[in-house]
Image (cartoon, rainbow, N blue to C red):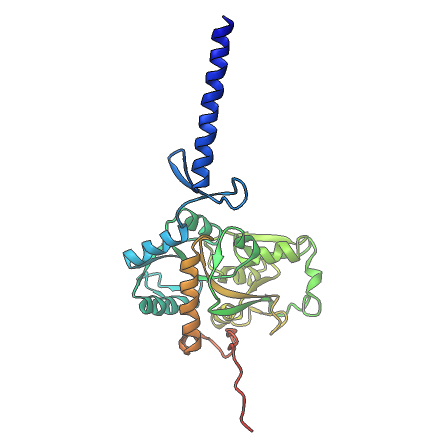
Length: 314
């Protein structure tokens, strides 16, 4: 009986040793398989860290190159992106710049899905589209789950109130009080500003697919005291609703952000490619040409600074 037990113990030790040696050999070669998934190991120090093989960024980029199509998710946000309600035609600053970029790369653009501010990241992560191709401000909460291209231009959000309301002209900080109400849109920058700067104020929360002009209309109709939009958005509203609203502090944006396109975090090759093409279109004057086409008044868009300085000869 003792001999049988001793034999069993020796056999177990021998099998364990074989498994350990085999594992060390597989790790030292830098390649093993776990649950049918190819895995690479870094053996620079002991067994090292484990990384999945294959470059997701390269795979995503190659799919676009092979198909010849960039699939776009987008939020209608004039004049950055304009969607004709009758024909569905897509125009605006970002579409024109992206179409030119795609042409330079030998690609086509497919306007795959209209999305909301609060759901656009989810569509990227589930790969329903490759890029958010309308203006996106790279807020920190978005940066945790997504990446962004170089800016095409910059935008600033200013405070707008009803005509004749001067309560916030001298000091916007008094807005942080429960007796005031801010018109916001779910998932949009107005919501982020209200939560960050004025947490004590009440919110009139509008659904994420609401047109940004509705926030201004809520102020005009006394449903809210104030909202925050880019000047060109307010300009269009004031043209059709004269005498209803005004800027509380003209020329003093409460936020200034880059207008970018948004991608998945691991699409680094695609991002670098788009960055290079955007830089080219900024430097050769194409972007400025498009901005002037859609700019409702001079200075409505903040341009990117040129990365050089001209030196005058003596």
